[in-house]
Image (cartoon, rainbow, N blue to C red; front, side):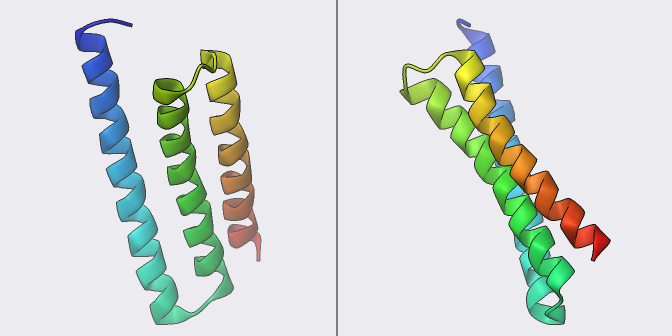
Length: 91
């Protein structure tokens, strides 16, 4: 990637990170108000999704990992996050 596409990617990643942080914060506020297990688990799930996005960006920009390795790292965080979210919906 070169030039403007790098800027587009960074911009989209920043927006994604902000949306993830906002979603996690709202979920956490709901958990503090209601103190239910499913809201706690949902907050943890949203936080791991946000961390996965953050990890991918850092790993790609600041390490020598390949794009495939970076996507694997993000995917592991997303699998864990979606598993926690699924658990929050089922209990």
